[in-house]
Structure formats: C-alpha cells, structure tokens
Length: 309
Image (cartoon, rainbow, N blue to C red):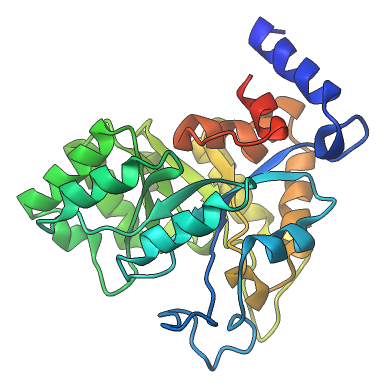
C-alpha cells in the first residue's frame, strides 16, 4: 500500500460518524440538482405539471433520503439556464458542507463569459460549466465559433471542468472533436448509460484521456415499466466498463430527476450491486476517488478531508 493510501485509510478509520468502522464505504455523488419552486421568481425547470419533481430539492432533503448510504459529499449540476442561478446555487451550497462543488451555466461564446467565469471561480466551490444538448443549445454548432473554443480554453486554463449532457451519438462525436480543439480540458459525459453503446463511437471517445463518464441516468422505462433487475442494465454497464476502464467512471445519482424512474436507494443499490463484483480498488475509484481526480472538489468536513489525504 502506498503511503498516501495508508494515511487516508487510517484517517477514515479514526473518524466518527459516516466513515467509522462498520459504516458504509464513502461515496461522492457527482450529479445532483438543487432548485426551489417556492422562490419568488420560481424556477425554469421542472414544470409545475410535474408532480414528482415540482417541490424543493435542497440539501436537507437530500441528506434525509441518502442517510445510511455512505454519501459524504455531492456535486451540484446546474439545471437552470438563468445566469443568476449560478450564484443562487453557490449561496445554497455555502450553507451545507455536504456540497463539495457546483457545475454552473455559462455560454463560452458570449462576450461576458470571461468576467463571469473569473467572478464565479473566486468561489472555490465553482468547478466548471455544463454544455451540450440542453436549453436549446448544440455543441457541434458552437464548435465552429472561435469565441466558443476560446472560452473553453479559458475554462481549461483555469483548471475547471465541462460536463456534457444529454448524451446521444452526435454529442459523443462533438465531444471527441472538442478534445482535439482543447486537449487539456477535462470533460465529463453525463448519463451515458442512457445511450445504446453500439450506437456511438465510444472507443474513439475513450482514446481521449481527459474524458470521464458518469454512470448516471441508469434506470430507464421499457414497455411502460422501469426494471430494477441489474441484468436488464448489465450489458450497457459492462460495455462502459470495458471501454473506459476503472479510472474514468464516476457515480452520479441524477437526483431528484431520477425520482421519475425510481427511489434514490433503488438507483444507488443497482450500481452498488454491479460494482460489488469489481475489485475493492475499482469500487473506491468509482464511488469517490475518480471524482476527486476530475473535479478536484473542495473538502469541507472531516469525512471529505480524509479522502483528500
């Protein structure tokens, strides 16, 4: 065992609470959304007609539903196209040390991108931006704009991340192209299990060493039902494992969006069951170590600092 790993293990064993002996292994959830429909200005998403999602999704509720699962930190992924919501999320995150980072919403081709990025990056919880097939945007079209690529180069130079969603064959090709234009940008592909692995050139994407993949958005509906049997999902999970390997896969729940397909524990237990057959080192990488490598998140409490050791 390397000295760093020994120190981390010793620190974990010494901690009270979630990481104490006999407790669940530590987990960093790299994909949750925070919003509050009760705000005076409301929210752009979810819609009022969505009875499952249209309720406050805030850290206290998240803590309650994840109790006992070993979640020691979470990264918030922006679900609003409103620029002012970048600061709203940072303010919410500041009040709860379970949140170790946020991925915001900025448009790299806009003239105000640099000052907005510099302002938000002064907060160490700000870890990057989200771009792709959401909010009417198209990554492929933007890549032809020099200002957009220059903005992403600023992002990379700042040591920040780009999350790419929502995955389809075109987005896989566009991200592969992006890695040629900005090779030092760390990119996280969100919800790749929703994509049929045979429908996209995943090996070419995997050849880009700075691309990571979230095993998020796993559950899906088929013939009017959502299977909860691992065997239904195993082929896609195994393909991602084979193509990207243990060093580039991340755990993300997609909460509370995931509530439309199953409970948090159902989502979590399915991927935990899949990774149970992998080595202890691979499980550790998937559930927290790889998240630290790509997001370089901020430790805010003793459990998180133990993982930084």
